[in-house]
Length: 108
Image 1 (cartoon, rainbow, N blue to C red):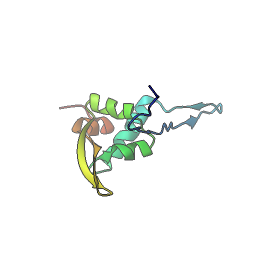
Image 2 (image 1 turned 45 degrees about the vertical axis):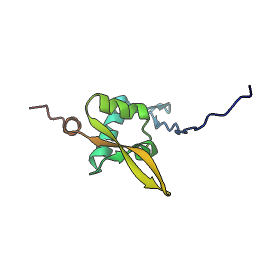
Image 3 (image 1 turned 90 degrees about the vertical axis):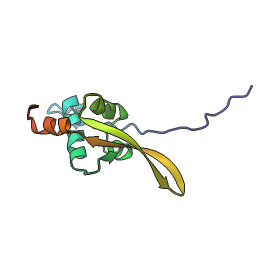
Image 4 (image 1 turned 30 degrees about the vertical axis):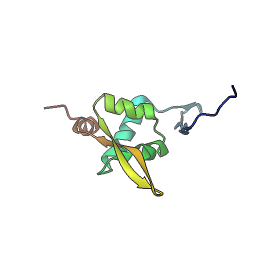
């Protein structure tokens, strides 16, 4: 039986944001800083952001899942027409808990 290529391949670029410390070593931003950056981006978009936009800003799917899991964001799928074809996209929106996390205000 010949080897067959998969029917569909999804390519998700792996973009990692790095910063340079005072000693000149590269390191990744701390998780809470990445989370805050993601929440700030989501808060600036009235309709939320698509998964593609967040990936373009350097966030991973795992980071998006974490925001949803801890209740700081919601994710919904939408069907859109692009190039005459219907495709599904994921839209991520900030929640009130996410807005409170940005402002540092406790729940009432």
